[in-house]
Length: 242
Length: 304
Image 1 (cartoon, rainbow over the protein chains, first blue to last red):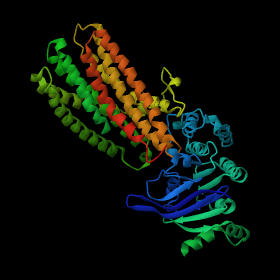
Image 2 (image 1 turned 135 degrees about the horizontal axis):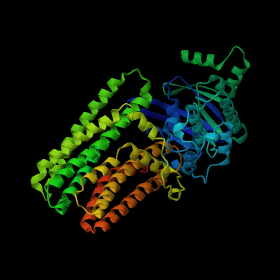
Image 3 (image 1 turned 45 degrees about the vertical axis):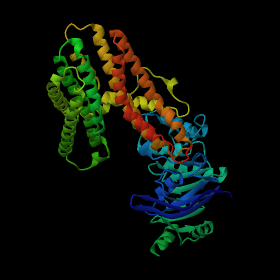
Image 4 (image 1 turned 60 degrees about the vertical axis):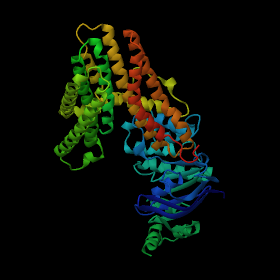
């Protein structure tokens, strides 16, 4: 498999607070990596650092062979990341926001796949409403649509299931798994859902205190799945107690 | 609210224009009235906008669910308003003193300063009264829902970042409706002496309205640009494309305001000095927002 993302010795600080302390991460194409860890462990900051939106720090990130510091345009064109619902423009409609992002990504218009996903997530009917009138769940769905716009090869999603109704959450989970399994997309998913990580991820990375504490590879995850007495939750607890 | 205090120099420039035009009406009484009424209108508009923003955040923002006594919130807001008023009075008086050096009716500077300060105080009191009325904030909240302009200009949108201009235009409209800016235009009408030609009245309204609207459009455009930068920072190639797109609406606004001002100049057959005075006011209104847009959209590193 081709190496799609390589992050080496990532350090990020907010003032005196060192949030990331030398994180190394590699993602191959077609990989589904679940990023787990307690609150404040640095998951969101890591995702920001991987797309260059975190405060400048030490370390390097290369996406598709393009260095994020020296060729950010080429590197960012290969990444789709979920958008914080709080940052949405309340004065634009969902469709207008999609068009704005499509323009920013260099697309000629909103791709048909975005409308198909909007239908799947039951968001199509409200796309012409102002975002200011959206509920939390609708904003979350729009954030997902924006992140997946143009189906970039690498997806970075931060708790995308938050606020979704069960039906939409199931539909979106199946959509993600299809993207990974059939379209060869790579997915880095920051999540607290250990069930999702245990049953669907090809690798699970545990982040604690700004550093990678443990990695479960595909073989270890398969062993956990096969043993009815084992679970990722127990395995994580054991690692945390070390 | 503090950023709105930057409007004080603009207000003073308007007063300066009024003083410079004083000879037209052959008397300094008009100049003093100009200072007072413009300060009243400006103070009312600025404080009303700032207070509304603060109280709307308190009533509908994330902190609205906190168990805070609304009376305490109101008291703190009023305290901040008082501090802002004091700062405006000090800044206004100092700037008027500087302006007076070149004013034709220098003997009236003291009275003009008094009128300016009184105007600011009364304008602030009126703003406080308007906002704290039982449903003042709630009515503002509902007014936000009406955002469609009478004249839509879809062809102005840039295909590279579609709808950014719509975002700026709608934000301008919302801020215009929130800030009580029309009060300034209305107050200018009060300054017109008896027997003035209708063309002079129309010209005065055109000049004032163009500058006030330009200020609102510039500030709203800068705010939206900052938000767009944060929103789109993870997307590729935005650093290079955002600046020309973000500047499009402010430049169109500037051109429209200039057309209005030129119409006013033609109406009263004013000389080039009037155009220069208007341009100085426009620069005062636009320079800070333009600076914010340029800083927000500057390329970082080798971003392309």
